[in-house]
Length: 360
Image 1 (cartoon, one colour):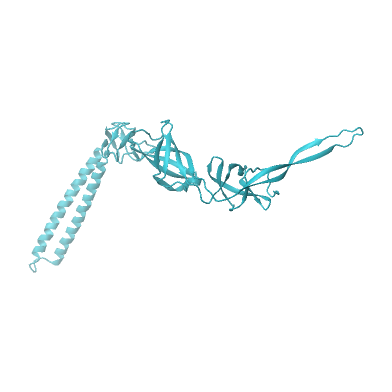
Image 2 (spheres, rainbow, N blue to C red):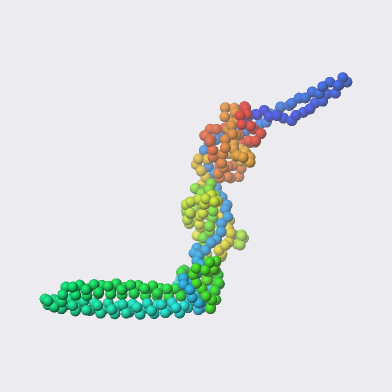
């Protein structure tokens, strides 16, 4: 429901100068003009619609490959742009000292295992002999058992060390952790590669491109309105005239403290390599609006450098009420503030209406 009322406002100051033969004093008259304002009665309502936000394509999986141990590059089996499968050998390194450590660890394990077998056999023989009373003292039998247990522990320790050295040797062969494409190569055969080098570039960069993530940061005011499974539309500058659809696959469920936004991801199937990581996209997300909102024309919201407010006609008196805005559509906007159902709000407000001014 709308009402029309007037607020007396100072008009243009008109100066009327009357000239007389006896030089009468000038006469001044201030003319008051009436400004017509309109109001509406607030009722809870929300605006459902869409919001357009920028997004960026990112690989579904991404890894920078560094060497685990130091060694010389023996061979590089891939190059930039190579399509690889999980488990495929990418780079082979050579490190003679590592191979020697493996051989040494194996010899120590073999020696410890032989010692354990000997002590185990001796204890078994003493145990059989001790069945004849008086042949073997209990002390000798216990000593043999203790030596057998000690040799067993030593053999197990050497075996663990041998397997650890073998595992290190396995790091000389670098394989692909998942299916993807090599997007960067920084080594060549003969180069010395090793871990721990500061600011070192990765040997290879592997990205999964058959599936991408379209990452979008949603401002705080829309974060609660977008949910997993919501349908979205997007388009890219690289593919003009083409529109694509998808669904919200996952969200961070928290706001970035620096930008006050929530990050969501949309899975993009890219079997034909239509999209590339790094592409920007314009994403249209559905917004459900807030059930706690009031909807007013945008002209009802007065924005200054200090505040944003609407003017409520309360008992024939203008009252400023600070508000924040939500969803917007055409010439309407959601507002939130200390407002109540049934309040009369000026729809064509302006800063000329001072707080406390009489309205009628």
